[in-house]
Image 1 (cartoon, rainbow, N blue to C red):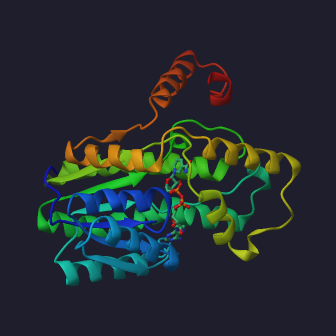
Image 2: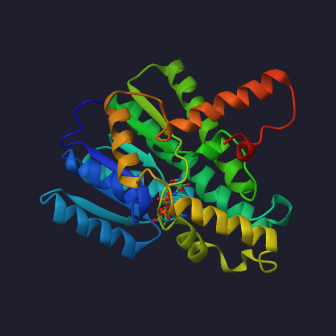
Image 3: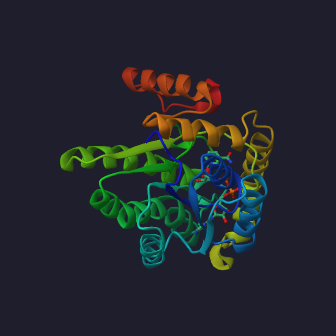
Length: 283
Ligand SMILES: NC(=O)c1ccc[n+]([C@@H]2O[C@H](COP(=O)([O-])OP(=O)(O)OC[C@H]3O[C@@H](n4cnc5c(N)ncnc54)[C@H](O)[C@@H]3O)[C@@H](O)[C@H]2O)c1
């Protein structure tokens, strides 16, 4: 989709981090914006920044929980009625939880998979049929380097992001069956600085905890925090790379080139049928 000016973008997770930067990149290209997030003050701040940097851009804030299909369908209905359709959907909202996979609670599984995996599924389910009817559109799913390799202390998150990659490739395959002009991109960044860990701590369902984090879970959480805050590529840079991929209709977006080398190293381990690929050892 090479001319975004005047078109309509919906950004889940638009109240913070990468979603905020994606919104600003869309506004910079003259797009109308619908921000969709559980965090109403976060969305208000994104809207304020859009107004400040790109005056005249129409922005709507729509509070919702992406893990709830009826709420995502209500969003799609609203955008249809208000703007006549959606051109660009970012399935970007995401959360994480820390700890060895056997320590994760049932609530953690339901919560993280609900947001990271079902949130993307519901976005596709609610918006793609409408895009097919209008004859054009583009879906961007935010996965992660964790969609391609599985490090320690983030089992549910890894599973959710592998699922996002699978869902994105499946979407392309299914769209080929019906023709049409719907683009798809999947973005797989490594760590970059955002308040994601803090936000996830706030958003984690209160009844998700069975016990305080174990020592190893706490250690992995601290390592993740360090890696995120010291990430060298910013959310703004990743957003700009993503918008360029949309404009050039590219599917895979790897903002950190080293991740592609690790994907190849994993493929070699598969080829050799050796031990499970360890991204921490391969870095
Ligand atoms: N920051 C990183 O290091 C990193 C790396 C790879 C991938 N990602 C992915 O990037 C995406 C954006 O993350 P971020 O780093 O900007 O984090 P962030 O916390 O800054 O932004 C995520 C947004 O999602 C919203 N959200 C959470 N649960 C929601 C729900 N149920 N319904 C609607 N909105 C909800 C939050 O309120 C927040 O505004 C996520 O999918 C994340 O998994 C992040």
